[in-house]
Image 1: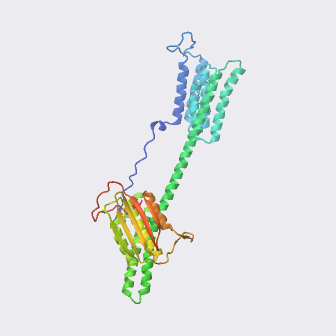
Image 2: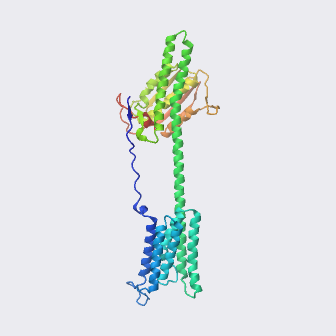
Image 3: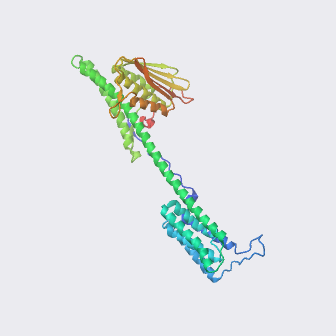
Length: 433
């Protein structure tokens, strides 16, 4: 069929981040400091419900306190602006702003509301910076929170122990939560990397199965037909010509399949340039042709159908075809038998396959990649993996002098009736992927 260019990539764009995640960390720090300042100024006035005997100095601040408030505002806003680029510097400025804010109303301690912006900075440093930077920020904050009451005591002033301890606790919790956030992010990165490695490994196994099933069957046919042609090339040239023709057809078919696979594997940088020849995906309708080619290679195949034939899922058809193909390849290459039986049964909820040969020859085990003998070879391993992926049951073993392979593939409920001849399948590589 004519090769058609694949449609451009239709991958959906990544969804935007939630609104709160798009807010810069500096804005969060400045907002937290502003909220603490608003609370600090609010307690300077008498609020509804409070005792009239409580002392409230009001919002009329002395000139010195107004200057302190201006310095606190400048330090806090500058620290918020620098927090993303220079996290430690921004944290120190926010801490200095917290101290100045506490001095605005001559507080005996640096209260929790004064540290809100600094706590945001501590969380950010612990969550996004190396552990050494987090320890430095935490130590600086702890030193200031301890030093503030010490200086007041040295000057003969009173201190608020409970409020200072609450500030230390808030700073410690901010560092702890930031460290936990960093650990969670690192864990997510590790999990993503592991998932990517697992996906690569699964794809390698899938490609290995396809290459094995595609090439091994053809090589078995080529070996038998070329051997037969060599023996009769001088005495029966017509039969030798037919055998060589079968070799050519099998080789071309496999070469076309390999080219299609290579086109897909190489089209990674620009999927829009992917051009894949349209080709029917192998399925149950191709078993007759597979049986005929195997019979022409010297092993007569008796294909039997039971149950009401109907269309099944594409992945089930592909798996069934590959299982029968690999089983016939093993019969040709290893069994030494002259015939075999392939039984395909359609049940109420499953598709059953049985490929049996009577034996009669010296069975040659398959070899592993290091040359050692494997009684159950990589072909049987690939068949078992295909069945397991579909949630089926697979078994293979000797029966008398021969060998039998059975597979039970579950069918989803509500399969459509048998498709009419000539219906086009999707592209083979797209279905196999």
